[in-house]
Length: 321
Image (cartoon, rainbow, N blue to C red; front, top):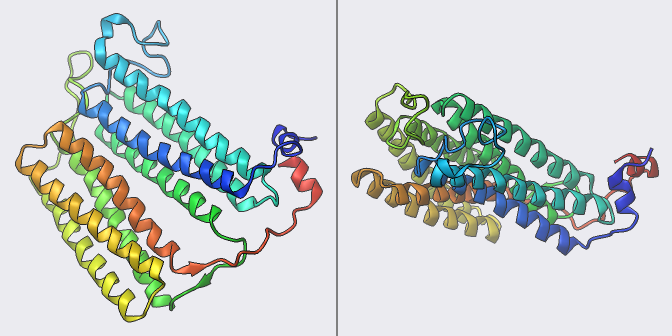
């Protein structure tokens, strides 16, 4: 039986440029949803809609009595549909392009399921009254979506040949170590948020929003320590890449990460000593996403994929996809 996507593929054959543009749109929207999700918390609108999937028990949309908080929370929910449209565009574009690159289609579907699972996790977050652990998982899942969206965008610019390392294995492993450290930095940042000053809402049914029962200052210090470690690893990567004459793109991306990480670190110190004002925290969340992207791009620059056409796919597989 033919699937709707296979029928569409008979009539629409987007160019490689269209696929790359669709991949970029999905990546941009994955960043936007992180920032707008942060805006919901920082404006204390996390429970602007009191339930899920409806906004209230009786209404799908916010009521006038809910005020601006209901509008902010509902707007963030609606942006999820924009994200879904972007993910749907890139998935269909990858499926309908000729030759069909199965790897791109799989990455598109991976984005779709991450969006769906994160939407459910967001609903659980609301239903549990903004439990800080589910809030942290919500952000980590959003960062996973950014990771997959970036993978698709980068793969769309490569060929389908087997990846060929451009440097020795220890250099590649060093880049993986860097990504791991940056990932830990982001993860600990979510714990700082969970124990910090912006719970996301005054509370539900008269009960305050729970916080992670760990000392905020110690968590912030651990986050700062990981930031210093990240600086050290980035500097090591920059010097090692120069010594081994790594590909120019990899060296440029390492320098870009250092600049973004430096700006993010300075912003972190300013917001800590100014008692974490909302606007700076919002910018810091955007910065965390950009740091994550900059780190992920480095290992991808240490390989080459020949500009070869995709392997021919059997007609039956094309019909069933």
